[in-house]
Length: 337
Ligand code: NAD
Ligand code: UDP
Image (cartoon, rainbow, N blue to C red; front, side, top):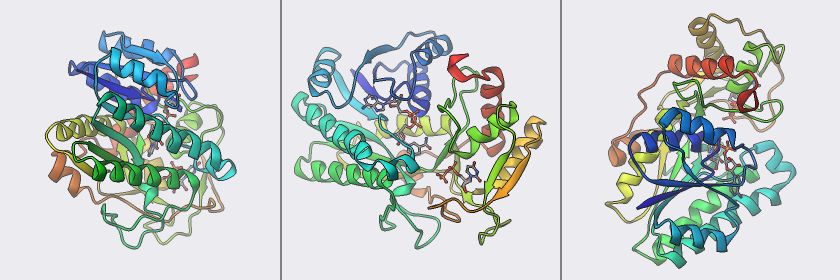
């Protein structure tokens, strides 16, 4: 039986695919290369020794989905495909509701038509919004404050309603905290187009000399050193969380939302310090004004993941900054080079 991996050529999806293939799992990737390239498939084959089964296409194409599900005998879906830029979602909300929400509805419809009952979905800690308390538990109220977060929260609600209506369904929303790091082989990693929005890809572009200096967005937050605190998680730990989620869904029906985070946070300056000391590379930075919409600090209560999935993070911030740097320094131009 096969796992359909939507968005499997993307940053997180490709790491999940490598891990799943290395465990002998059977899968098919569906991706439209909106934010990735065919080079990723070569890297996956290189690392695992298996050329992944791949279909180029869009999750909003129901006829294609039903054909793939039927032909490949799909039993479960891991749904990574979607847009993820918070700022862009504020400028162009309909693009996000179309791809992230409508795309997920089409996927659920195709699953219903084909009798596919298990779904793991890439959600985000952004569904919580301004923390009422820290760490966030899964029952922290949801109040996202941008269309991207709203789109994730809406898909969660749709999944929950679908499970309520059909008790035979088994679905899990995984709320990721801040995924960074790269495959330990150095052959796969994050390859954002243009100037990165996120901290770690920005740091590695400074380290490799492509960007001059990192802007630290605010040093006057009520945190350990005034800079923003986030719960960083190694992308390989995150990938393992999806394997555990699939195992859980093979034995349980209904809907669950589960945080995937380390359960503690690091400030921007702490991440820079870790990067510099582990990799021996200086990261020049300038303190800039706070970024619009940024929160001071949040991290995960990861106890539900341990209880339900027997999962917790194993890799440290040192592993994350090392693997991010190995990927970037060995592939200065990303997959294009
Ligand atoms: P990514 O952009 O690297 O990967 C997404 C993949 O989906 C890309 O390969 C893209 O080409 C593909 N895709 C997009 N729309 C598609 C469509 N309509 N049909 C088929 N393929 C499509 O992003 P990522 O960082 O790997 O994130 C994966 C998922 O995890 C996303 O849903 C994202 O919102 C979610 N997430 C990411 C983070 C993060 O920090 N990276 C945090 C929380 C949640
Ligand atoms: N950040 C920063 N400079 C950057 C990018 C991010 O100081 O160029 C900070 C940001 O303000 C936040 C942390 O790094 O405190 C993580 O930001 P990222 O965009 O990676 O994740 P998010 O805040 O969206 O969870």
